[in-house]
Length: 486
Image (cartoon, rainbow, N blue to C red; front, side, top):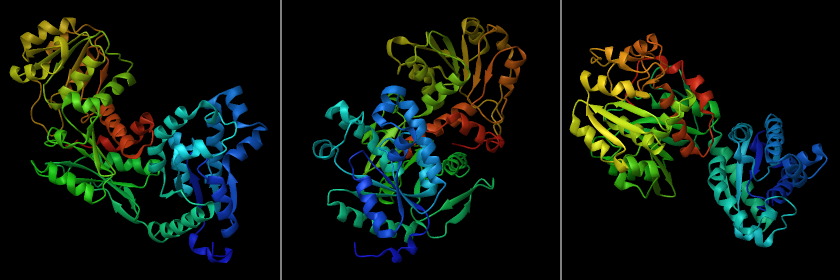
């Protein structure tokens, strides 16, 4: 390197954090960078072993990986609170989202990317547990971690050169990042007027929700709140896209460098044939609510069904073996009903004013697992005495919607231990839930599904594992306002 220690004031005081698989050159390059910049290098794994008085292999063998990861997280928290360091991390540091958030807050994170084949065949990996597990396992672990490294890093450096050349490349990209991304961040106020400030930098990656209409969507508030809490460098917006324009938008999003987007009506179905890959749920529902863009390819997902199941789990409700009655046959009902069948519900009855629409939904399930029915008082009084779960997937009772259940006396037919769910989250308690609660039933509103499907989407966008329960507590006050289209 040609620069001297006196020429690095422009790098500021943030740490330089090196991440990557074992054998990718983090410590070697870190030493070279420390010599050139006058900064102190701390190898997190070496520090951990020094404190424990034993090797990582012994820690794994004697106390297990969870214990090791706890120690690793303690060191990450400590080092992230300091400044002016060069930190070489362990290969698995990105497995815990709190580690990623702390390292990104306290420093510039550089991923040293080197071929896993080259590492295993040519580097001395010592007695680390992963190194002893064989090449196939090593390659499989790298494949599982690769996207996490990419998403955790501010900068990626391909390490296929000598340590000196790689260190030079790190330094150049580090300086470039500081000159651009570390410009004074601009603060923008969230469009819902809730006072949420979002920090916008040149490195900030773009996300959005598309729909028609979409201007009053709650998704920007939900996602930007989680993004801010997690310390992620993303911005989430609402993007109006007219009906029939999904294909044009997808090309524009790729060209503009979007990391991904969510989709609401009327685009969920239109996106299906445009995807390069579909996850099993999106393929089952034939609807996409989450699109992740990677290297020019679009991967379509649907997180609605998973979100509903997790909300049931939060309430201690296992749908397996239950008889379920669902009110409504729209998009929300489809994701809920098919997911319940997938999870082993004994029978699912789809009640809708238009029976043909209910029948169309039921035809998507295998082996006649769902049955259509007219949604009227007589049919409900026939089905509900045997129901073990009742789910409202209609908009009846939603704030801002004039329509309401005209008569809720059908609730008298429910067995006393049957839970009642309403996918509506505003108001917090609909008239249906209020009357069910007064009759002694366990009730769940749509807040859980709303938060969990958003959590799962953000995990797909960022590769970060998110504590959904914590996010639900954070979001509850903000979402107490009247609902908007999502």
